[in-house]
Length: 193
Image (cartoon, rainbow, N blue to C red; front, side, top):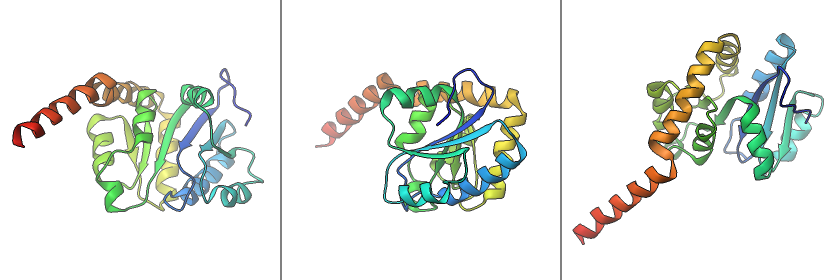
């Protein structure tokens, strides 16, 4: 994939099932615009799924857009360490709007600022309220391009989002918090039955 820990590339990663549930065409369109404009940017999309071969074929001539398939934990750890931003490309569906998926939490655990679609819902609200990422409308490659470029050119904002992302993970999603919340919930349920 040409990934290096000590270079000046702006790595945009996406950890997702590469299936019909994700909006990967928007990422590809945005990536192609940014790659023409900036030499040191690379997109790495990790995950398996029914659309993986389709997107690998579609981007086979794009050296800086890599659909790499399934990635094991050690490689994923390295990618999260070098990532400048992580994309969570969900469709505008009620089940996606009402939850925060595990990929979002994975980005936060590494302090990776997040770009999510759609531009509304529980995850979009969290990113906005906690200042740990930005959202774009599903299918809007122009908007995605603009927010990636904004973060590329504003190191201070990128750093703030990274710090806040890690803080959000510790505040809401660390194992101690999740465990305690689960215990509290079970106790509440047991009181009613």
